[in-house]
Structures are given as structure tokens and as C-alpha cells.
Image (cartoon, rainbow, N blue to C red):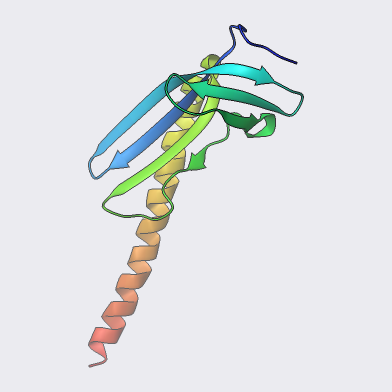
Length: 118
């Protein structure tokens, strides 16, 4: 089914933590083509992306490793879901930070045990 000219718009919503700053962006993407399984969408400047329907409204961690105090999470959604995804991204980032803190505390304990054994 070709849907060029369809008013349905998609947004890439991104939340990024960088040290003590949080930034949230919602960038519009235009629907080019729809099939039963996926949407082909395109930003104003950039290449076409295929989003499978089951992946719409699903947050994805963009940061593969924690480095320089930066974590990022994003999702594709329709305009009516931006606020829901904003909250989901905040929760996802919060859980990531909590997980890193727990891991660092375990590492700190291991180091303290090793240092005290000298």
C-alpha cells in the first residue's frame, strides 16, 4: 500500500543524559510507504528508514557503553504517543543509571578488598 501524501507523521524521540544535563527531542519523520509489516519513513534531511510495526513505540538504548557521562535512549512513535515515550525514556535512563551505580559499587568493593589485602 503506497501512502505518499498520508498525513500520518512519525517522530523520533530521543532522551540524552550528559553529565548533569538532560535533553529531550522529538524530530518529525514523514511516512513514505506502509506495508502490513513495516513503515518506510524519512526525516527532513537524511535517508529512509524501515520501522517494523511491532517496534513502533519501543525504546532503544542508543549508547552501547557508558562513556564521558553520556547515556541516550530513543524510540519512533506517532504524535499522540510522544508524552508516553518521554516518560518511558526517562524511566529507561533512570534504570540504566541505577544499574551502572550498582555495578560500580560492586567494583568498588572488590577494589577495597584487594587494596586491604596488601
